[in-house]
Length: 205
Ligand code: FE
Image (tube, rainbow, N blue to C red; front, top):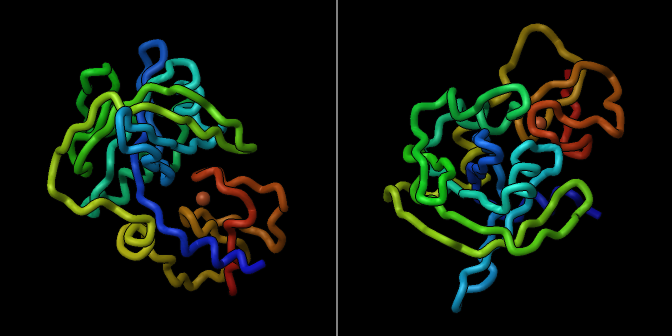
């Protein structure tokens, strides 16, 4: 099997937000898909169980999806993608969040629209939960181009710097985290983006 082939599937990038017990939190996801288009609009999202936002959606049954644009700076990915809501109050680090009618936050900058959902089903999928949800509200915010995963990799994620110091290690192809060491443990999980060892490439010194 050529696992490089799976990287050719196209994705967008989104900030997923939730509120549970008065606490706001959000994370980056790349899996948002409309499933039905007549009557009630139904969507699915896939969320890593390690994310605090996952548990908040399980508890509250509600979430918002802010659709990111190509203007999104890398700092937004650092805030929402590479740290945990268990350690940081992510929304306090940004000044571009507003509260939607459903009481949850959305981004009113770097997003061209946001969608509000109520969960109607949850499917266990090993490391992830697939939430099936019905669309409650949809609001357009700007005419910016929706950000794709490919655009993020080409234009937003910092390119690896050529350093004089030779590092022996492994680089996470998702977020750029570097694991220093000759061998990467097969069960290693990236501390920034929570992807597994399969998403690491060897750094050739
Ligand atoms: Fe990573």
